[in-house]
Length: 218
Image (cartoon, rainbow, N blue to C red):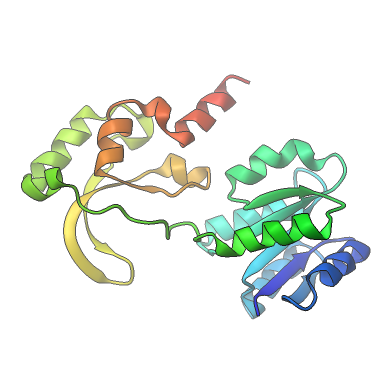
């Protein structure tokens, strides 16, 4: 049975979520961000529901904590009145869903099911090595892509990746670990075809660049 951590400063709201999830999930509760971090360490929940009442609300703090510590637990934001303006910030930080309180059982159940079914960040499908990589001198290909780099975030970051996962050795391949994508909660590792076509071709096609540029226009 999946364990769900509910972090909410309103005891009444926490009780509502406990009742809605009861029977299908094991529910543990925390009263605020600090208590939530302690509970995450002790219980390692499968999912977190966190309240957001303002910019420095517990949900945003927890999203930053998970991101900064590399903890791959999906989090659903439960926004209070007036907190909808922070939806974009929450999604950038990696929230799996943004629901405004009060939440009915069907919407909550669908969001919880989707969050638990989705692969955690950093575990998305890795594309196979391309024929071009297989037949090329990878060192020269790495140098050429770094010279052709158009995206400001990827300059001199193309490298040869030879280990994936827990020490499993695989055939060397072209990779780029993008700091901008990581900042916005996107999968940071991109591979040859993406590097060639987007990073070195049309950076505006990258979701992270789109988010960055939209912020500059404000």
